[in-house]
Length: 437
Image 1: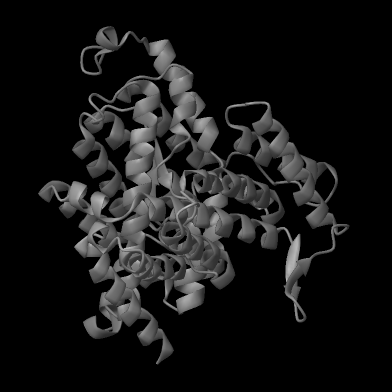
Image 2: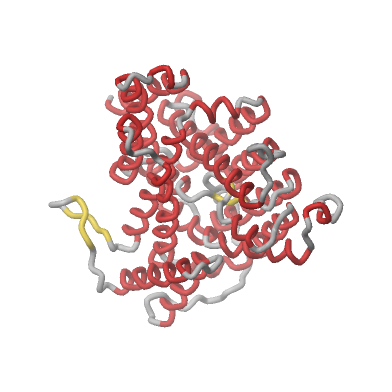
């Protein structure tokens, strides 16, 4: 094990790797409870989603550790789960089983383009500003969902939205949770989001807002309600009914967000750990294959897209330098399967602070956009603002990809637009025409 992970060459030890793996797990353990909460409105069984989340995270992270040998953890991604629920299932009316099929297919496509080696072509085709805008927009969308779940923001017939009743017990608990989580994060506490979630749940139980859980440790819930559900559409519908224009856009969006989120996370984590050489990441193809494989496996298990987590940087800061730390993180996700009874106390008021704080972190990508260039600012702005206002990540991406060629052509920079962007321009135009029919 020591020789396989090159402990001596990287100057690390088992204790440092274990501490790093544990730190990463604590930093992202909130997803075990938040993901079932986000996917619940689709009608999916929360217990099964909890198990699928833990297994997808464990399998993906262990594959990353064994094959790519990086201390990078994976789990169902925030933003992609919101897109799955609110844009695809609720917004488009696509059954959650078919949506899982879309996730599975996007993972397979990810695997193919990684093996074939056209990853760089695709990365270079999409301008960096639109990638940053998509990340920031997803952050705004997630925060908006969190504010709604907490009923801090509610529907209004006069103004569409307005502030809710902050004196309501559940809303007051969510507000307290936001303050607690913000304090933890401001103090630089690794795992601040997870600790904030735990503290909010404890506060809810102590104040009587949330009933006392019947148990902390229990049997593992059945995975049957979601396992293999991604393939049920083939038994119930024709291929023409399954592979609609809507589903194609869904698959493209899943692929787009996962692909660039993974690439960005991998390079960010690698830079912090000093893994990059000549601005290149060794074993990058293996790392991307691990991520793509985890997405497909997760879809079969019954969860939205699995992707690399930026929280892995917390483990690296604690000393992790090899894939052994990922084995530790993956093992802890397997142990977490026993804690599903705690789902009873993880209400929307408890998960809302996590959604809002994650939204804040993702919105930070706004700083990387050159707002002084109008031809860049317009498509970036439409990408970001459309996501929360239309309740659709896909719509935001589509509007941004339509506006970008227009502003670039009008500003005399048409030659800087990659041909793939022109193709996507017409694809998304056709998408809106299809929606209008």
